[in-house]
Image (cartoon, rainbow, N blue to C red; front, side):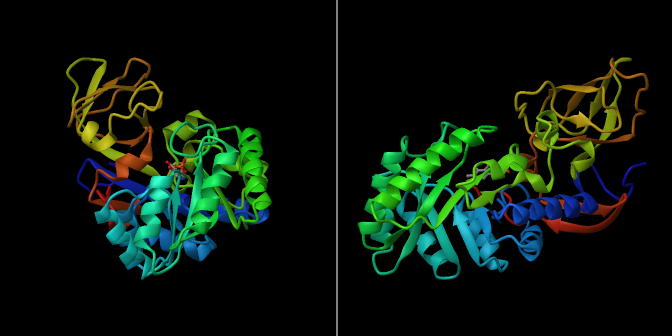
Length: 350
Ligand SMILES: Cc1ncc(COP(=O)(O)O)c(C=O)c1O
């Protein structure tokens, strides 16, 4: 039986794969003169961030102030917050955070820029201009608009323009490079220094060097990988470090198996795929429906059937929200559990 000492459903993480994933991508960044700033939203574990920093990461990326607070407490000293900060509660927390760490944030509009300036009027906060280079989320919409906002940040009290940041569309390095180069040159033409050009994302991590204007890369999922990345050929099964360990609790028909991992363990994130995860022990099985605590698996593609009580490892479609569902994760080496870690930044979504 897999991991007889653990109760299910739970998260198991293969430490040898983590070690290899971290080292391989740090090496890639070093070879391509890219500063690596891992996004911690994937693991939410200070222990993993400290390993990434020890390998050569220049700092960490957080999406939320709550995450940054946890990682600052754990000793991470250089944090980029890639989210527009809106509201007085958050600005107050941001000020406190800036007293403890080297902190940089982003802005993509004048309202956010002026609020940051107001909150930091007696000190100096470095702000990157977020650019929408095609992903269609936040970000100024044109290179000239990036330069305009950069000029504003540079002229306001309390803020200092630190460079450009984008969450790019996948597999579009040439277009992203063109966009950011135009923005950087427009900033330079206005007399601004563009210290950092920060991009990110795991799907196109092995092509990051093709956007040569980029100085810093933010990857998160590369630490564990997941089924969506297998599907996009960014990784293969043996690169996937995290699985949800689950137990077969019922076999109501010859073809249907029910496990104790539902949407509260795997999330309902299809991520454009068919089925809710990849069953390592039965690769041709399809997790076709989830309720909160039950996962229904169609076994028709498989020759064998699992017994009731058998344990399965499921590689989630999208690993980041899955780690946010569990209080702790179990680290193992070759199937033997070596450590259990509390997911310290779990639920820190504000
Ligand atoms: C701003 C930002 N940077 C970096 C990343 C890292 O992306 P990935 O999880 O694909 O590594 C994300 C992912 O959502 C992001 O939103």
